[in-house]
Length: 80
Image (cartoon, rainbow, N blue to C red):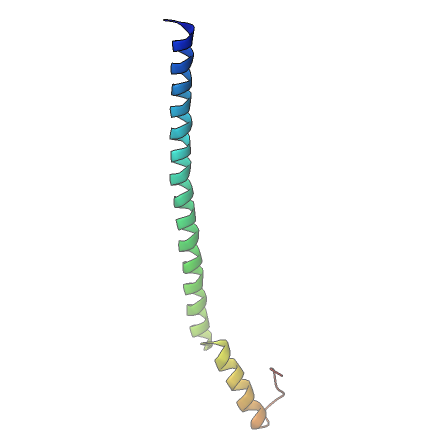
């Protein structure tokens, strides 16, 4: 076997190894991104449940509650 054939097959093997590594990294990154998205959604759901337990549904309802309290003389306005 000549040196030229040996070096070309060596580089072909190297290229296959690098390609396999990159393919695994793409799969791993997709998994990590999917897990991040799942965790973010989970955090949002937990936050919504906690707000429901505290009796807070939206920031708009807080604004309306503060306006009603000010009209009835029950406090100072929280929102200008």
